[in-house]
Length: 218
Ligand code: DX5
Ligand code: ZN
Image 1 (cartoon, rainbow, N blue to C red):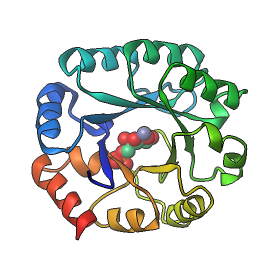
Image 2 (cartoon, rainbow, N blue to C red):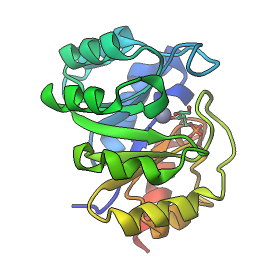
Image 3 (tube, protein in one colour):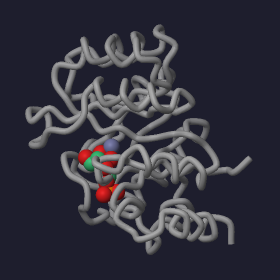
Image 4 (cartoon, rainbow, N blue to C red):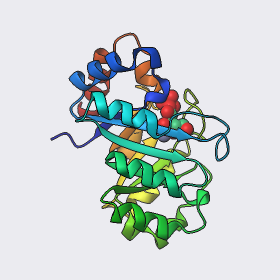
């Protein structure tokens, strides 16, 4: 099994071609995970997908493992709605809820892998008080809200610090990942890579995934 995973982020996809694109990507990737960004024009200044798109994807691709990144406030009802669809992972931001521990417990009680998403300026100290509840940490390498932004270089130090403190928790990195930085991110300690623009805006998904795989295994 590969020691890393690439999670295609459909935020950068051409929605009009989504079904065909998912089919192509599932055929070329080693697993069936998709990253779904939920944006509410409140927690972040953009609107994107809600449970309806998750349900539509699962109807066509019941094998899809949806990794849902909630950038919204409030999050309570969204957690329930995504849980009832059967998503595999949910990540939330600490500042979108008053009671982070309660929400993480709720996600885990629903049988879903729980992730804490850290914005670029969020200190990692918060992990001290919730790491036992986490299945993964979503390190944001751009400010949440938009695809196509540039990778924030300080993220590499942040990943390395988290890896040193919590070596057993998977680190997933989200934002600005391309072939020129994926190896550095991997070497810093991340094992999962959310990739939107760097995949969906390239001419051949198969060739792009192949390039990422080569960079991560050479
Ligand atoms: C940003 C989102 C990301 C986004 C990454 O708020 O959380 O998942 O899709 O997109 P790229 O790869 O284009 O930076
Ligand atoms: Zn995301």
